[in-house]
Amino acid sequence: MRGEHFSKHYEARSIEPVSTVGAGDNFNAGILFGLLRARVRRVDLPTLNERDWDAIINCGLDFAAEVCQSYDNYLSVEFAEKYAL
Image (tube, rainbow, N blue to C red; front, side, top):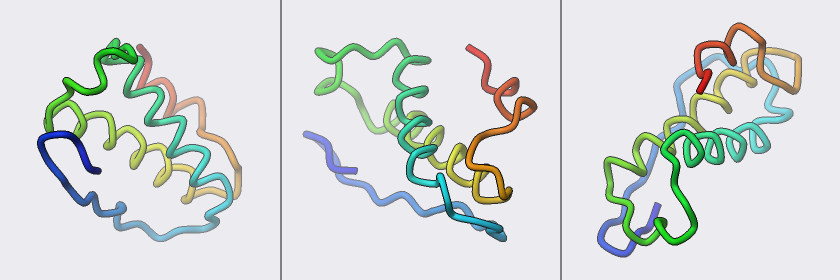
C-alpha cells in the first residue's frame, strides 16, 4: 500500500490453500467491504491514515484467505455472518 503519507507491505495470510480460484475477486470484494463498513467516500480516500488502511486491507486479506481454503469460489454464509455490517 502506498499512501500520501506512508508506504506499507501487507503479508498474505499463512494458510493451507485448497484452491486459489476466486482469491483476487474476493480480495477486491473485501477491500470494497472494508471501505463501505468504514463509510469511506471517494473524497475521503486521500485522508485515510495507516490504521484506516490496516482495517480495510485486512478485510481483503481475510476474504481472500477464506476462499482459498475451499473449492468454492465464494465465501460461506457462516463467514459472511461474521462480517455483517
